[in-house]
Length: 133
Image: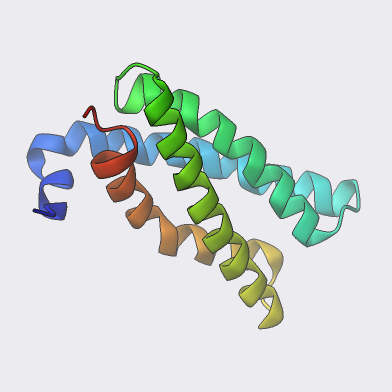
């Protein structure tokens, strides 16, 4: 049975706090990386988004595996994480580009993408990606 309420319950409060902290660090990297690539290095906004998010997802696997979900690496978790990355990477790129097509500033488009996808990411991570089967 799908039990989303348990993920965000008091029992998992520490997990939620760690997830938010890691996410803030992660998205701080995304925003600063985008500003550096777009404003200073003059990289195309979409290419910059793809580059920064790609690097960010590598960082997230390691940090979420060890510090958030406190579990060990195995091939199945890595495969599930890669599937997770591909799905959310495509969703994030689609949503980001929709924002750009709506003439939103690239940072605003990034913020909306983050706000919409973040709750889904913790749920999928907890219930699917890092779960020990």
